[in-house]
Image 1 (cartoon, protein in one colour):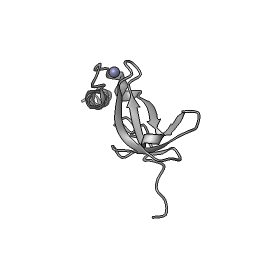
Image 2 (cartoon, rainbow, N blue to C red; image 1 turned 120 degrees about the horizontal axis):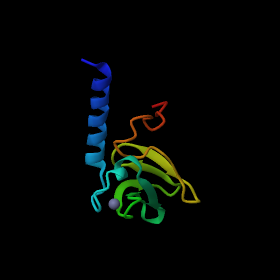
Image 3 (tube, rainbow, N blue to C red; image 1 turned 90 degrees about the horizontal axis):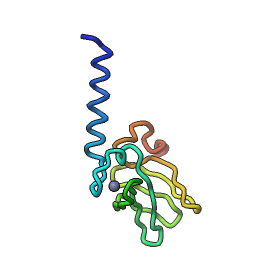
Length: 105
Ligand SMILES: [Zn+2]
């Protein structure tokens, strides 16, 4: 078997699964799975994943008054006063870091 073909098929399969399960429920955009937007309603304590294509918001996490957010999918992140966001995406796409590692406990 050609190893490169195998790797290519594996990557295609993984990306397909990510896109399938992470696609926007409103407009069906698969790009939403790979490049979601984030917003938070801090007074309400709710964090949302936002579709950059159609603007659909899904309540996907809890945000505290200081802007730190814990996503239902297991990731975490931080909203800043200017509305920017850093941290895990909270989707299947964030296979890289695992929330910065919870040292200590
Ligand atoms: Zn959408």
